[in-house]
Figure 1 (cartoon, rainbow over the protein chains, first blue to last red):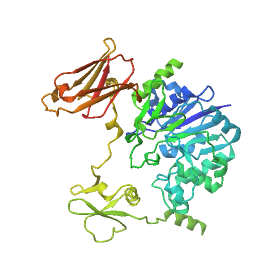
Figure 2 (figure 1 turned 60 degrees about the horizontal axis):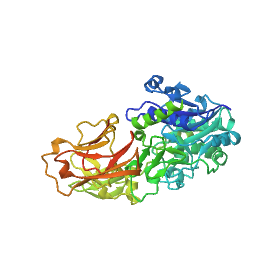
Figure 3 (figure 1 turned 90 degrees about the horizontal axis):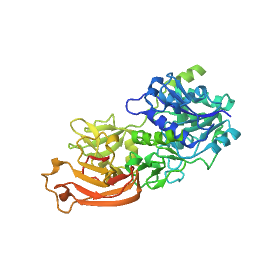
Figure 4 (figure 1 turned 135 degrees about the horizontal axis):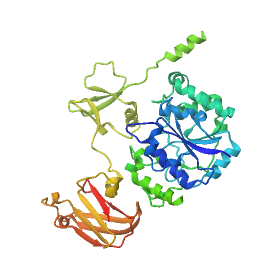
Length: 280
Length: 189
């Protein structure tokens, strides 16, 4: 079986997305078994990875500057070098082996897009604070941050082709399908949801599973009784010397989508690198 | 016909609600209104939909914002909960920090097993309230949930001389504190 994770980054003056992707790739190397720990990076400037101490964590680095960062992810099916791919966001960290979950998708799906996320306390998030477009327009609740697909399968090809078309024509699709509540930007989540709805495949590609628990750290959906701009204003983010992560006093056991890009500091990277080098 | 419809849909701009703050001569927000852009109301300023929704949903209120009379910008008012980092601030090692001229320096000697806490001499002439205490929580590395020791010092005493505490610690540990100052840094030698 040929499988790998795919991450997209592009240059940004304010945010070091490459550092996030590097941390994600190291976390994959630290937690996933051989055959399930390949990582490919799509980046607009390949030379930037020379700044990384262990750039080998990326099995493949693909230079691609045809689209800006947000639109680029809709090309994941065309750019992935793997037969079976999970495309993830760069700001994610893995805490355990999820190869059995990958096996499930490989054996049962040609395409799967995450439809359920959790608080850091492992409670299912039902608050639509950031998803009013979805609620008001009756879109399937898809999260492009974890998208599994098999190369060259018709359902995946149709899905991504339409997704790209939607992103390229936001005004038309906003007016036709999202008029009840238009998003500020028609991003990949909205495009994927709309594509699934139009193709009437949301039940096929986004069925319920309980065994993939991604902690989605947007602050206003953590079920706190107060307003927060960033989750780390309210709870601490702690990475110990064994790369075990706690948010507040909750040990994280699955995958974390930490959202606040600058929370992964040089110090945290050095912890991860130290363990990685010992592992090798 | 079909082409014409597509072109129409492409170019159709459905006007969205626009929101405005109305404020007084001091910049205090008095009201939030939709769609008054065309009305001749003095002291009105357009507001992002996100802010308007936060207020309509009761998450924030008009007192959470004010208008700067000079720059005509919408600013958040000072009223804000303290961030966790103020209440439980992890003192970062100097090698990972870009702090210079720290207010508080924590040094630990692995050889002598001495933890030293030092206040920047520039604060020495200050007069501190006699009962102001500083608490330092020595914990497992980057995990305040695993507490090893609590050290407390009177700030008045610290303003006279550095504080030395004998404690046996591993190479990696952390120190957390509630911030009284802005810049804290740690050295492990």
